[in-house]
Image (cartoon, rainbow, N blue to C red; front, side):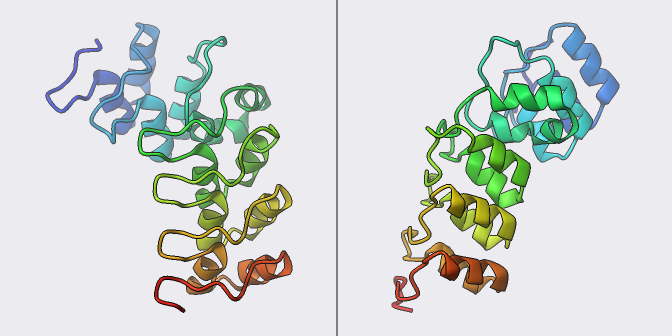
Length: 207
C-alpha cells in the first residue's frame, strides 16, 4: 500500500492530488502512512491537500495525526482550512508545534500564513511569546515582507503589534516598505510609515 512509484509517489499522495476522497478514506482506514513524502514537492499528504485547496482532504488527514504527536515545521499553517472550520481542531493546532521549525526549503509556517493573508492562523501562531516574529526564510524574507508584498493590511498590523521589524532588509536591500511601494499597496505603506518604517533606507541600486 505504501509502495512507491518510480517518481517517488505513493497511492495516498496520488489519490489526494487527484481529489479521490473515497479512495483516500479507504487508504487511511487501511493504515496508509500519512508521513511518507513523494513526488509532489517532497510533501507529505497533508501538505499536498492544503496547497491543492482540498479542504475535506485536509480535515480527513489531519484528524489521523496521533494526539501525542507534535506536528513538524509548517504543518500548523497547512491545517488552516481545518482551523477555520473546527474549534476542536483549532485548539489542537494552537497547542502543537513551533513556528521556528523550518521546512526543508527553509520556509516557515508563519511566513506562509502571512503570504496567504490567513489572519486567524497568524494570530494563533503568535500566541506563543517564544516564537520569533522576525524569523527569516532561506531567501531572507520575513513574515512582514510577505504580508506587505500581498497587501494584507490586517496581517501587517498584527505583525507590527507583535514587534515585527519593519526595517529588516533582503539581500538586495529591499525592506517591507520597498516591497509594499513596489506593489502599490498604499494602505500597507501608510501603516508601515505610521509605525516607524524608515523612508531613508536604500536598496542595492541605491534607490
